Image 1 (cartoon, rainbow, N blue to C red):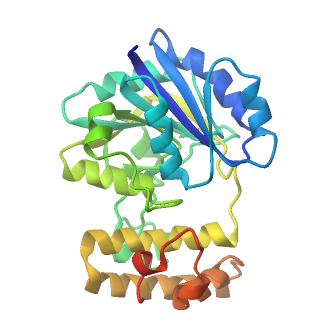
Image 2 (image 1 turned 90 degrees about the vertical axis):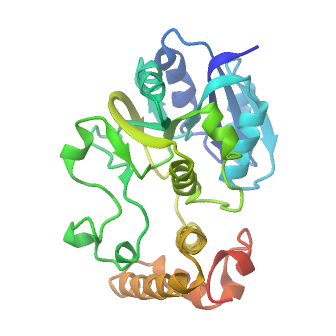
Length: 299
């Protein structure tokens, strides 16, 4: 059986949020046909107990092979669909959000659609991003200048529909053909940068990422929490992504700028940055989930 939209979720200790997400999906879908698959990456809280009580989704139990791997597993377990709706477990969708996103997805050349997202307090969540460059790694985002700033903060950027380089992957609608041609998410990104990589690869292949304010959603953010380890993984994967797209020599410079930026943050009191600095300069301290020989320079 084929459906309009396959909604896919990857959970990890998501008991505090998953009910609100699943409850929001029917109204968000409007009149579209859909399926919901949740892959649980080895939760140790009551997430699985909650999911076992639901009749509105298929639950797939898995070991934690990473977010990208979990997402690909969820897509494989889903009904055939025209579009794939990627959802974080700590998100909720507004009524009618998915048909509004689907209308944008139907436009020529569009492969990925991102909605307008708000924080839990109702304020705008700045989910749009510029692509990774050398200038945007140096800790100068406080200037607000686009050449130094990856995150797009300007409220005016969220008022109209337009193409972006990439958007935070908490809520994304992806054309199924686009997903299949790119062979899904790159599973070598255990956590973080998988949505950046996917959108940039999609653009390389002729598929645009488009933001629309016509669809709304809420994202709590940090539903699984950020630790020193996950902060380190975020920085390691940013360097890995840059190396793959720009080459080895530029990546050495990017790596050096990342080290300096993290030292600066640590001196300013960011406690997660010192472990990151140590992992950057000592491969043996890098998270085991990342292949140290393939993720970062120097080796």
